[in-house]
Length: 481
Image (tube, rainbow, N blue to C red; front, top):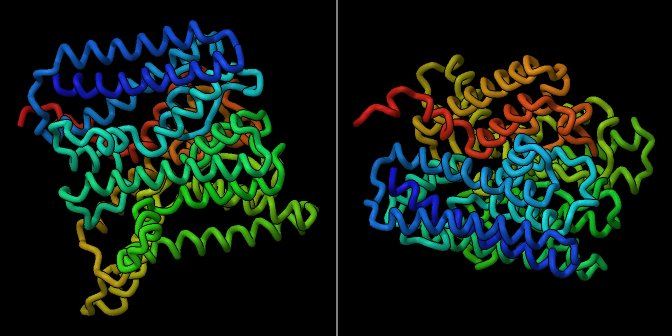
């Protein structure tokens, strides 16, 4: 446990530095929040420093069980300290609301309790965007890429946090270099899209914030109407950023470095992701044109931006979607449950798992027709190990069970059925906007305190893909080996 506190100390120091960086807009725009931001950043940094110094001689963590505990505690503690800028600046009045907003940020969910973000202090706006940027890549993964000498079983931490990553063939020895490569791509894309948005005429301040929140599949905005007030060109640029955020970052690295032979290992996932996105865009575009009387220009723009936002679980909105045709809304739910590729910043089940689920169903049907034939589940032309197929099936069943329980708990907390369904799926997939008052340009401010805590827990479950959190609930986890 002492070593866990030491690692938490390192992360809190990083978080404190990030908070202090919000002094730049606070001083530049003169919003008067610099004392609160300074106090929040220094307090967070000093608590982290105290933990690091106090437990600097702690032994390394070799127990795989503690890796799960460490990952969960990191996300909870960083979300907890992430409430300080909201509370200290007076932006949010209650701890429940502050924790909801902070967890939504670090989990890159995009659900918010703030009905009017345009009036927020610049330092708070940047803090919201920044939490999504480093949360989108993965807090533990970010630290492992930058500080590879933690003296810990890095592969255990990697699989505990990134259970959605395509690690079926990954070796622990190559993990550190892979993380650094993918982090490099993440930073490169962030810089490129900030520059491109700036060149379209967007203010550099807006470009930084919107790039942070969309490249991370987060969806927080600095405008009350999300992306609607942007120009068509700017919306298409952000749509491209969202689309790339749903691609496996290791694949992007291989593409940018011309390592073509390595692309074939993920080509089926990529094709599935792009084909589903393309067909969904066509459905939404024609539905908006023929069912909702949008012009062709509006249909194409809203269809492209909104569909990509849904499948990447970003949550950015090209227009208010709360009144859209019901079949489009249902398709949106399915897309957010699917998500992008494994190893991306998106939420949902991930394309790799969906492919394996579908092919396993096909295998079972074939086995009924030809019980003596050998019909393995294949991915990229290679048989998928039985234990991987079984793991995918279990994760899918657990995912469905958590959604059902979440809906029930929200209804018991006083939320109507429609909003309970929308909020549960929106929080666990990381999409953000739900249905009813929490959908479209709405927010979660009207939810009861109990409902907000349930949603916060669902965000954590979704970001860590359920299994990492649920394993802590097993009695055997707490028994000595």
